[in-house]
Image (cartoon, rainbow, N blue to C red; front, side, top):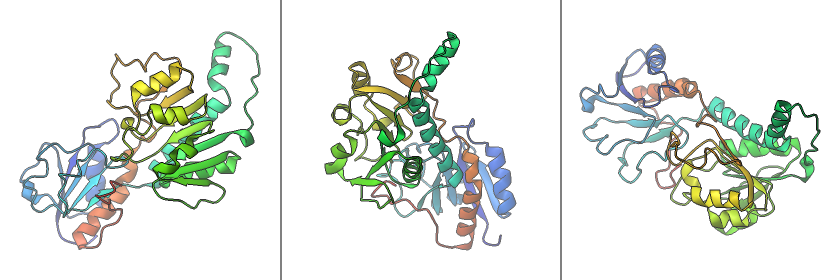
Length: 316
């Protein structure tokens, strides 16, 4: 891969998910003229062409990076970055691999099917040696709404529709998805939530969506609805959620994301009988983005236009 020499800085605060040595080796193999640096061994900040970050940059992080040509956020979405202080002249790129999206979609469908087919009840019965069939609700009579109709939400909605669920999506702007009802804008959020048996949150976290799942939203949901959140913990007002569970407004919730991670041991969510917790694993293998990151490094080295740029005004 031809082009000018480039220097890449990686910030890796999640080594359980990202193997920096693998990234360094693979990027150098694909882009031989690449110099790889791992935070905090930055060297001369002015040399940095590309920053790969997996968490919000600390204040002053980009100071003195006078040669910065792109920033790549390794997670889903870019809510960890303060877009107000982000250098506006530098493209902000998101990794958007099919494998990562597939993992999240698998998780969403798994959680709904486990609830729909009473998996927890059967595991409990097995432990007590009880043989008791439980009739599931018919798929054709089960209504699902997916909040967020991007590559993850739209894909999940399509799979649910293909399985025969009455499926809808809600998003910022109207979407056209065959066989799926589309709601859009704040004015239609209540209609999207009403009468749905399952509510899936796959929204980007922005100023408009922060805290969107609150007492008002829960009150508009069908009594006994089940919530799955694979987006961000800050979408949910946790105190409002616990109240909705305690009052049986919601029958249960599966949370893969939380306002503070790891979830504190003192959180009442841990022991709540209606809460299923997983440790932010809906998408696990960030390493699937190496090929895309290598392509980006090559584009920078050759001075080519960059793909998957984030709209700094919208936040996604």
